[in-house]
Length: 149
Image (tube, rainbow, N blue to C red; front, side, top):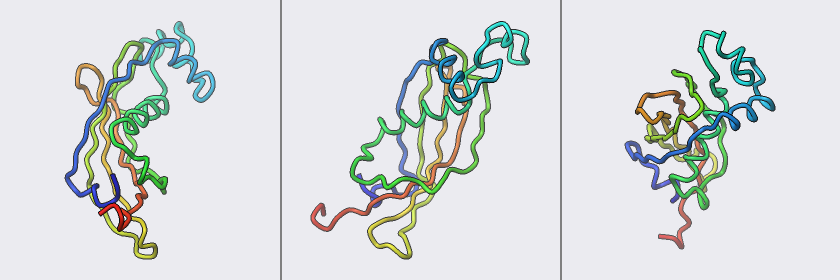
């Protein structure tokens, strides 16, 4: 796929990935060591009533699903950022995540003709189809070379 394939309205979906207790704790110990992510007793006493995944962990797992859902190998040139990140529901041990993506907008670069930008809304759901998080990714994408038609 190339920039030209990411037209507004293009949708895709992929899943699933199950988060284990051990993975939640390991991620949080390194990157987000808040008590409700790393200590089961503290998590029980928290407003969440049990261990939950870091929101950053949730986004990272979703990003891996995004990379599996679409072949980005020829077109991805990175990203200048993300917008509107929202964590809506706790992700708990045993939850299985899946994602949907929808291209909201796409524009050719004004200064570099070999690329364009696509804004894609990602929604992350658990196994009960409850939305747990979402964000808008801004992707810098390589245009299709003339030889690839």
